Length: 251
Image (cartoon, rainbow, N blue to C red):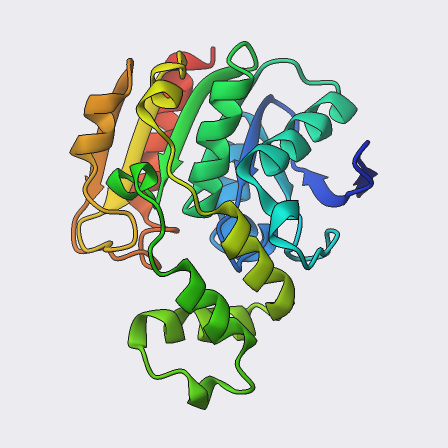
């Protein structure tokens, strides 16, 4: 399904099953299928009685592409999600974001506190509160003529992943330049919904869980043993904990 927002952004989206709505916000250089469908998140939530809503963020998947960083502020991307929910007729939902999606979800919960029943911030913990110092290096790697030109192993991983997902690398370069700001203390204090913070113990992109939990008014944390950023996404313990968390707060 497709939805054209008031900002003339075409948002590709799907609704899975019948039940309590859960908005799923994918990570950078990913898309709804890679982040949520291929990892069986949609199936897991459907079976638990929820109706997951998946969508491709602007610049990703089959949604609109832009090539200027100003088009990818976290606020604009959070507003895309809000307009999609308005289009679908939902005024109260649970929300889960992974990696960049967690940054968007945190901004969404701060901007629209009355909408969020329960919030899961995954794949981004302490580093949610920090600027992305290597954003320009990642953007340059995405713009390089070939992956062989990228020597830094960390930024090379972003380039490889972007190619694996068939992404528009120029749009992603603009996205990472425009979206990677920290979520400050005042914004975190404005998140009133219950929050579950999740990250793998080996996830250097996310950082440790406890510092973010301590900054949120109503949060708990989950560390996934022996999981890095990519391994954590489809982790069974992660899924079980999220269903239990939503069951507790979204009834």
